[in-house]
Length: 279
Image 1 (cartoon, rainbow, N blue to C red):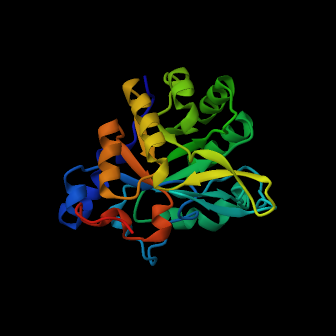
Image 2 (image 1 turned 45 degrees about the vertical axis):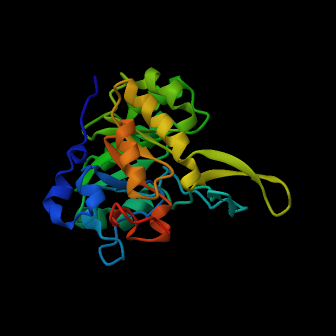
C-alpha cells in the first residue's frame, strides 16, 4: 500500500482558481498540471509570464546535498522532433538553496514539491528531515539515476519516507522494471524523468543528455500505461506539447501531467483551446 496520497491529485487547486479560467481542452479532462524538475527554476515567480493559477503544484529544480557545477561541455543539440540537453543539473547545494528560496516557497501561491538528487540514503534522510519543517512544501520528489539498482532505489525511498508524501521519479526506459519492484515501497506516486540518449556533438564525439520534444510522447505513453496497469499512481510527462497530448496521458492512466520544454517555448502552451495546435 502507498503510505500517503498527494493532495494535488484531486485538482483542488485548479477548482479553487475557477473552472471558467480553464481552456475547453482542460475543462473536459480536469487533469492536474505541474511542471517537471528543471523546467522553471527553484521557485515559482508570481511576476513571471506563467499563470501559476493554472497549475496544481510547482516542482523545483533538482537539489543535491552539495553544490554541483555545470557540465564542462554544456550542449543543446536539435534532432527531428526534439532536442538533447546536457547541463549536469548545476545547483548551489541544499543549504544554499534553502537559504535563498525557503521564504519564496512559503509565500508561493501553490504547493511546492522539492526534487532531490541524493548520492546515498544518508543524504536523502538528511535533506528530507530539513524539508519537513518548512512551510508550503507539499511533497518530495526523488530523482533516481538511470543506473540505479532496485536495491539502491528502495534504500533511497526508505530514507526519504517521513511526514511528506514521496514521489519517485523513474527513468522511463526502466519503468517496467523498477515500477513493480518499488510498488510497495511506501511511495505516494511515480513520475517520469526525461528520457536520455546520445547525439554527435560539434567535434563528432557522442554527447549524452536528456531528451525533450514531441517525438518523446510515444515512449512516455508506454511508460505511463505500463505503470498504470500495475495500479501505480503516476504523473505522466514527456512529449506533451498540446491539449491532445494531455488527454492521451490521461487515457494512458496518468493522474496528473507534468510539462517540461513546452513551457520554455510559450508560457501559454498548456492553456490554449483544444482546437488550437501548438507552435
